[in-house]
Image (tube, rainbow, N blue to C red; front, side):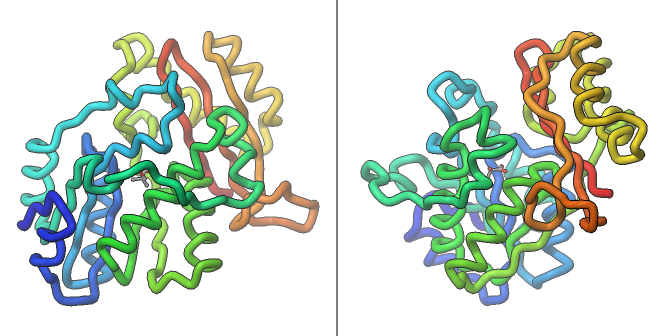
Length: 265
Ligand code: PAF
């Protein structure tokens, strides 16, 4: 497995196309490895990027403390048969202030965007840069971050980028909690409580809870919910009565950890 730390090393790796690509911020778990597996089914060569993107963190968020575990991540990726890891540091991806940024559509100000202003500007900008560096034929994004997947897919279509976005199913712990690097922040008691977010989303999907009642249920259990909403697939518009393909999305804080999840129905 080649580990490229800058664009010269990436160019020298010169992997033959087609390439399937999994962008990550590292601290890998089974959810990332499932995306690697999905990538392998799409192309003979698989590349993974590891980059904690300052541009998508607000000043009060966990950028400085986000777990950076490059050596352990590379061990896992080598064992998974990955061909190339692109792990640039900030000076490689942002050698100067990023004066041009992707301006995402109004959807970026809804759901996650209401609570994380400019988050999707940062995500879209770094994804565009990573796609330009790696030049994959396929790029894998997980459905847990459903709004990210939707916005990236729209960006790729609108900018005619020569890459196909492939959605990966959410990987869950045995009690239903969606895998996330941020789960490591949970105390043992919070970890036991954490599957409730998925449970209320399932109840919303089944019509047993309205989104407002799901917010109340989380609050009653000590959470601070940001939102629970039902949107239409695939564009996350507010659904009308005829829109049958839907997704329930939620984000809530448990102690100091913010968890997000989504369930299609
Ligand atoms: O989902 C993530 O890990 C990040 O948002 C991504 C897509 C790697 C961009 O930094």
